[in-house]
Image (cartoon, rainbow, N blue to C red; front, side, top):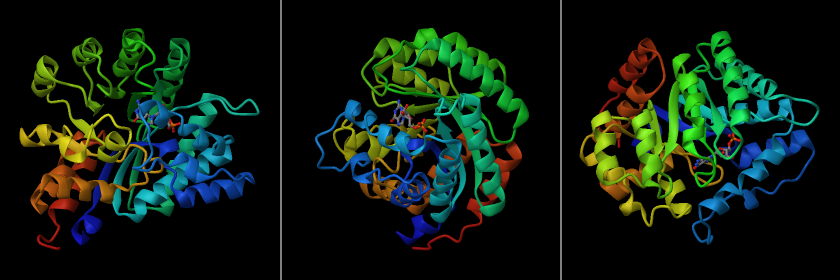
Length: 333
Ligand code: 5GP
């Protein structure tokens, strides 16, 4: 709807290499002089896929981001994508990885950060922050090395690097092994946004909730006692509707746990996850939420406000964004 298009939006859960749309694909193909077909990368509702198959999609994007120039361009293209649909605040997440030609994880992060800083002039109406990701399917020693780099990057760029994302294939890696590493990030002032409950694993979910976090990604399989823990802790949940339905961890939109959280006034936000892979936009996701759960305009505004308050922006930045949203003329649609 027109209303959704026009309202200032907030994106808190977007993976860089999952958020390359068709335009980004062609720009990166042109830069690299290659021909990676975006159709391999996209998941369509008719595809017989599961979560594992979804994870195999990222390799197509990774083929396109093999140099610091390509990583910087990918960052800029993703920022431009969100900017064009009136997203005023974006927390981008990405897993630093070594690239060809002795490019280190630190170089990877520097490429992303300098692109974010460059975009502050080019796209002044969108504030972008970075959550470097820790990939649970990789080793703890990699995670430990990366956290050390991330802590240094936060000192150097405190207004860009605001936290850490814990992601990667949820059937791989043991959360317990990553606890001291994430604890180190937390004690160094980094916020924690953890993917949790993407697959059935009650003991891990409980362990993660006990450990605590500033925001929780997905939370699809959180039930019973763990759901009570989530409620009491009031941890904001990032819901990614298309991502969950297309990767078949949720049967249908109207089955989505978003409604359970929204109905009890739990802080919940709508996010895209990987708009390239799932062929979506933040506006589309909000429209799906509106249509599926019969949301009124005031509910949509509430979702934006939830996102502002759950973001890792400073209090002053939150205040400015909130002002921006509250000044909206009502009944635009
Ligand atoms: P990148 O970190 O390379 O910029 O973005 C792609 C990566 O994000 C994937 O390789 C994966 O580690 C992570 N990712 C993207 N979507 C999801 C998701 O839905 N769940 C989890 N756990 N990780 C994801």
